[in-house]
Length: 381
Image (tube, rainbow, N blue to C red; front, side):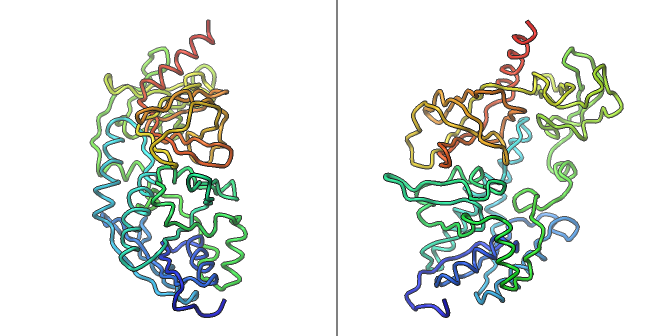
């Protein structure tokens, strides 16, 4: 569609410099919308070229916007990010949990601070390059998994509200990643082959432990095997996560089975890290979890206890489960098959088929560890 009507709806597209958001802007421009690109700078601490590519990302976003033929505005949300996302991120790590900053960033920055800014620009909608889809149901807007299951990002969007979804467009949600790259190449977008980012939301791809070192104190303690044998010393429980295999610091101690070591439990009270051998060790498997701070896309009312599926980490296939309880912000889920390394602080996201219903933050490590330990004892007995 050439040109645009003066009455065209305005859409502000969050452009990160990556190919997905650039193609989202391209598709909306071609569909006749009045499109404005918005580049968000949300991190300022040690923002240098070594790991954080903010400057290059802005250059890439500007180059793509120029080809598409849309204006690009840069806005700084660093203060909002530090207050609403990063403070919680550090507090969760200090408490021994492993938070997912992308989930909180979407709820607090991309679909709140960004949305508010876009409305001030006179926009009717905002758009992003997320691989997710929307559908108008009988009672509410439904959030669906992306058509490209390998790239589906509904997991990160499960805390969005009906008010937010009513303003959002996900143009690439119906496409496969290969189609997005092909569309970008055909349009001459200079970032059509740019590598996908895998770093923390807005912080970049720094070595993670090195990054945490700057913000969290070290509190060394013993590394124990499941039978209580001391095999090393950890640098601080905040620097480890359940299921972790690399970087534990016991590489030369292969143990009786000769299998790799995995982090199975973090005990804050005794400041001990328990490790086990073998990917499928019973202490790494959990059949049940409880979640807190539950959020449901359709509104305040949670889904009724019934059969569903759930993900406990990104890029995991939704696993069949029973939603046993969802009340007052708490949910309880029992899986048909034990799930590996269910990690406190991560999100448990509930689905009904391809529809994302919402989810919650997985509860305390002690509870998950006890459940796993109980299963192990039953198996041994």
